[in-house]
Length: 455
Image (cartoon, rainbow, N blue to C red; front, side, top):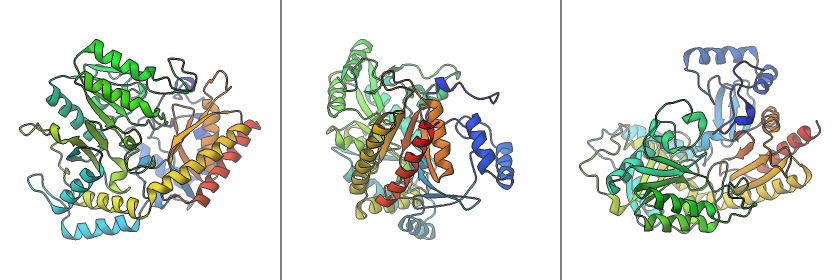
């Protein structure tokens, strides 16, 4: 075993581990000396960190649903860091960016511009309820920070309740409310008042719900709000990327609990906004309106780093404070990319495509679960799909070794995706994916499952 290899049995992380014997074995077979030389240069100049450096491969292109490496090999990208709702290099997004570069490439913070206003107006119209006040930021982590500050200003409180195993970004405030050990562990004192509760995970429910959520996880949030008494905000991912898909009544109960205790509800949809679940915003599946909605990643069309805080009009109370103050807050280029992205999603029917192709993929994967005992659970919503691999279905012990085998076998066959929590295949393709492309990906996965079960 590599001297720096992690204990695979303890993995509870946002992504697959970049130091493992299986990755080294895959690289030895598929990464030629010329590529290794480039990777070595990368490794020499960048700070090393889990989940990225050392890197897996070298890319030279990205188009549609595909990544292209420096050997010309194409990979269907079912990962994409969730920026690729409209695919890579969508011509309408690229053209919008080029036009904006020619007209107004940058806007200092003391000024505004028509493109930024148009985007804010569009998001306010699309967002549910009275979510109609916007702030832009250059990344989701920054937008989370703005939301946390606004919650403190609005309530006069500083405590938060969030979920174990959640991810809200990598800055110190974001990892304080986040719940992943790989980001929090060994870092020292975090932001005070950040309390955590179990997530709505029916498959591994700490309340023993037996696979059908009994909403005790939602009841516990009310219990925590009552016991703490002075919580500024509940902050959570509407649907966790693993995914954890809460039942319909979950967010209704949490919303009602927040209202009873004077607590704001902040929903983080940074990776799953803009159609991934089959609706523009995942919260639309639940029929409630949060006090703040945070979006990002795909907002920039897979090109430009863009995020947004969308808040209730009544929370416009920080006129003499600085919530964000980011240099690229009203980037005309980023806003042009975002406007084009929204147009593509609506005009090319990507919400419906996410629903129909996502439903089809889940049906096919559930059929595979009947043939392969290592598949413990298939869950998802739209084109956010998780396949949990286990050593035995009754005990539900995580099969992290099998998950790594499937990951690298699939890569060798032209399919890229992410592992989450060590044993969950997280499948998030572009919303532009066609059914025949999904069939090709499913065929690869089926072959990988057969390889692993066949020994």
